[in-house]
Image (cartoon, rainbow over all chains, first blue to last red; front, top):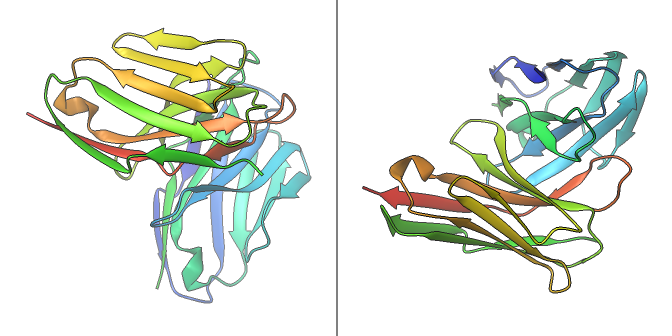
Length: 113
Length: 113
């Protein structure tokens, strides 16, 4: 079956520290991959999407970057975290079979202090 | 630019009552619409996907309708149970290429025993 794994589930980091969140997908190949952020009091915001290895599109200017080193791996990074980077980060991918359905991982909660 | 609105933001009902959740969108040229459930601190679980050519979709006690011309979708949950307590999100997809979704702010539902 198709699954999305996100790691770590919870992270508390000081301002100015680096960040690396990992998303891996199983049960499919060459999927589109997406990073969304859900901040307190705000809706889900698309941050990055990738249609293949090394191909990254940024939806909003920000302190974060994304990379796709392997077909089923999507990484969200920052060199220096800001307080405003706190939030719940969700990785998503289309369901196999071209139904148009998007499904999500369990998320990574980041708190920047 | 597509905007998705969900009203009310929060809803509390006694167990057994039917739930009616509303979603409206400003651009009717959508590809599909998806309803999600989110439990506190968790990722999103896909509930129903309605293609733009469809009027409704059903799964168990859940029924979602779509009226593209008026820019509305409604999620009905019959005979609500305490386990239905969660936040419900709707999201629309604009085009066939890619799977970028625009989300509403969600409706937080509490079903009281």
